Length: 290
Image: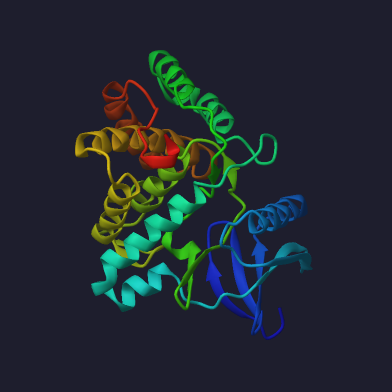
């Protein structure tokens, strides 16, 4: 990394510009198998129509694995929103269009991890954090999620959507999986809303945006993703997505931030409030996803 410039940092990795047209994503763990898996997924996704940068090799960076990718520059949806807030409606329209195009790609069984299986495991992991009755109802609700072969990115937030000229590209493919789009939308609810509980005040340090702006992004994206459905149906979809989001955050708090007891308590409160309001996790979709 001599003379390389740090251009991005996240919870699990850092990204360095190593030449004009090449970047390396350096994992904070030492798990080479994880890096090799992401590169395989990236090559598969590129070959199946996902708009994503070309991936090259896994390299060693002072004992940590690095993933070498084509550089798509520094422009992303966050930068576009900050520089041209008047373009909000157009940006969100393009964003929703990108998300739906990704979720229109079909994945054959066995190619990617099954998101639904993962959430049964997450429910088991947090079993000691909820009541037996809550566990049984949530287990039954997870079973209502349809078996689908939909391609899921599951971290398609604005910092991971690159803007190159007039085209949008998605980066960070380590969370690729297969399943119902509720798992895609749940991840965005966590990103834009529930994770902001970790930031003090009305400003989110991760996104560099006011929390109100993040909520506007999520609410607008949800309406555009389900455009064509009655408002009452979109609201019901939103409740189902939010319940699954609270389950995810219970798992995340226990696994990654056990010292933040306030986060556990806050997520359990939300989970307990939404569970009685939801009788199914089967979302209503428009067009091809029906």
